[in-house]
Length: 413
Image (cartoon, rainbow, N blue to C red; front, top):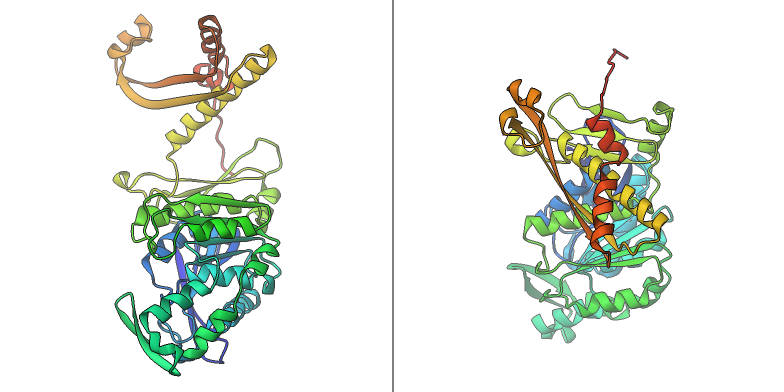
């Protein structure tokens, strides 16, 4: 992952510091840009934000994270900020990205940052997808929290509050701004695809906020439960899951101009595949005319585990072809096939231990490739129908290719 530190003017003219994280190899064009708004009083260096960003970058989406005014490395007085100034900072970040790189197509917001991206989306016309993570459904939630922590704010101009173990100076203007900031209109008029992540056990922002956001939004909208995750996504597996699901979901709505143009220019035939590798490591980018995939090796083999291994992709091809073939056959016969699950594994075994090998193959010694395929057929089908589908699985085109005579010709391009 290629990181670049940048500076740009924020809402009050103060210098804000951000980081653009780009896919490898250096110089390659990302498929799209995402702008990330972190939680209240958090900085761009929050671990969860880093893990989410890494998962997106591994899938070709560049991520721009920055510190709001008075937070982290950014200049300015945090006490002078409010929700409105956060929206202005977000707009300034989008303007900078548009000017220096490419306008963001994705807005991502964590906690209050989620409320901010919902409110700021209308200011960035290029945005096509918005994702919130543990976001409140209205700014009153933060206002009530601050009053509980510092009740004197209702009478005094400013007070000191402790949040996440750190002390911050807050002015009463923040409470007034939060009280005036209704999100319901912004959510209803969002006009972009929306993905809501929330944990049912979030003790900071309850799950009911996700319900209210979902109900106020118009389609297309989706909700993903984060199970046992906490509010700050302190477990790496939870944060990376958010990034991986977000990347897959966003691909349906954003325009992957950079990656798609390259493949359309270089791939001339339907079914052709282009694979590119960088100057180091095992990570590979795989392009078809309309899709981008990743391949890699696990860390135990010296890779970085950013995608399936070549053999896992091979098994995936056989499994997908098997399931498609059974679906086609069942539909033609009008059988009640509810679904197919195919579990595959690849092993190198000694020829003498191979139950399916011929005597000549066993006598040849050495090792051979063995693929096991377990097919689960779902639906109210009789034993004869299930046996027939097992026979049909042998006719899957990829199965025939793998078990037939294959000749591969290679030449330098």
